[in-house]
Image 1 (cartoon, rainbow, N blue to C red):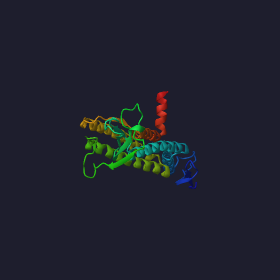
Image 2: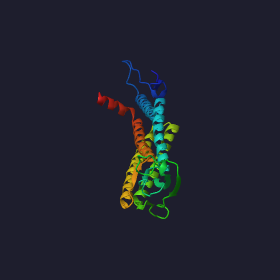
Image 3: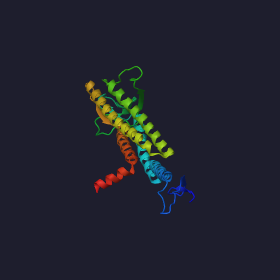
Image 4: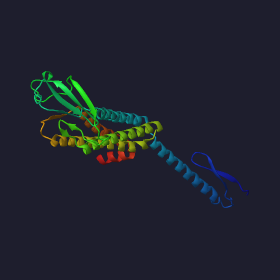
Length: 283
């Protein structure tokens, strides 16, 4: 008998390796060639590895539904960023005012301040509601004089109605607000990279950035409220009415929204297998 050769093909019909045919004897066919068997096993292994790599790559690429959810969560985070910028950049965190009859004339003074500057406003007593005991509110028309605090320049503490601000607490709250804004920028960059590169990997650092920024914003509010309490307790010779204003409300709402946006990004970053295990455990 003559020797013959044949090609071993894989599951897709492609040739893997040549092998020598078995010698055919008078009693029947011989055993298969070892080279052909090795080539067949190698082809199957390569095919299985490529298939797993393609499946892993497909898992890292987001679908259109995931992209829409990411954009919705990003919109929520952007709302928190806008509220933070609005609150940090304005000076209506707290309003301070003595009784409207404290000065004994036709005008009275009211003051409102934030993280960076304070504004003293001279109001007409006739414009104030009769049932209001203190001077204000600061939104009434009057002559206003605004000055920036000198915490970061000369290190001086501000004096408001003969009361001295707590410099360390005021500086700490201002620095925390700046750090939170920097984390928001980093989180926005991560989301932009996730959408442009079509990769879900960037959602995890973005979620960490937004959650930390929200926590820092809330901590900034706590320190600011403590600084107001220290201010009121520094000198009791002038009775003051204090009222936290709309800038503080914006920052408080922003902190909660940023944390919620970060949690949404973290949930979207979880693989589908984790969701399936959670559903299986719940059922």
